[in-house]
Image (cartoon, rainbow, N blue to C red; front, side, top):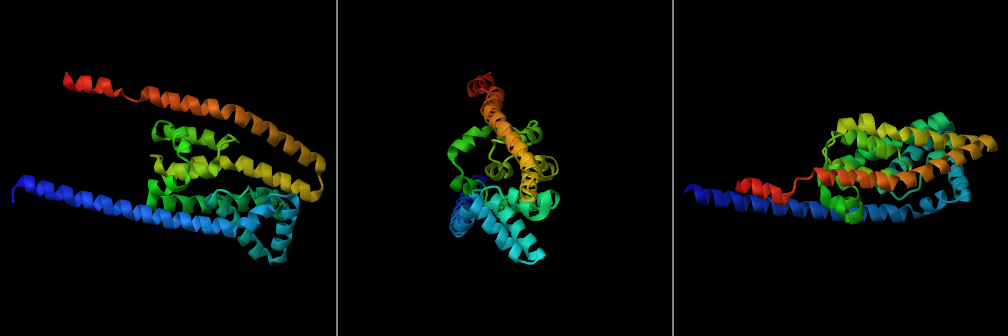
Length: 259
C-alpha cells in the first residue's frame, strides 16, 4: 500500500468519523430540545404563576407548605431551571419574600450556579448544533465578537452587568467561546450578584411592608433598565465593529501568498 492510498483511506475514515459525530450531535441536540420543550410545557403553570402578584402569592404559599429543607430545595431547583430553560421569569424576588434578602440571594446564586454548570456540561458535550437548535441565528451574529478571545473575560463581565442583556441565553453561547471555564465561574458569573441582591432586597421589603423602600428599589431598577437598553446596542455594535476591523482581509492574505 503506497502512501497516497493510505492517506486517501485515512481521509475517508476521518470523513466518516466526522459525519458520524455530526449525526450524534444533531440527534442528541434534537433529543435535548424535545426534553426542554417537554420541561417548558410542564412548567407552564409555574411560569403563569410567576408572572402575576397573585401567582407569586400562590407559589409562596406552596413553598411555605413544605418543611424548611424541602422549600429550600424546590426554590433552588426552580432557580436552576430558570437558567437551563431560559424562559422562566426571574424568581429572585420570591427568594427574598420566602427567605429574606441574604438567604434568598445565596439560594438564588446557588441555583444559578447549578443551572450554569448544567448548561456548560450539555453544550460542551453536544456542541454548537445544540445551541443552534434553539438560539436565534440573529443572536449568533449579534454576539459574533465572542469568537475574539482578546479581553473576553472583561467583555463578558460587562455584559453580565448590563441589565438588558439576556444572561441565560448568553450562558449557552459562552461555552462555544475560547474563555476558560474557570475564569468564567470565578470572574464573570459573580457579576450577576448585584442584580440578584437588588431583587431579593425588594422581595424582602415587600414582605415586611416597607413600601417606601420597595418603591425606591423599583425606581432604581427602572433607571438601570433604561440605561441598559440605551447602552446595550451601541456597546454590542462597538464590539462587533472592533472585531471586524481586526479580521484579516482575505484579499490581502492572497496577495501576500502570491508574493
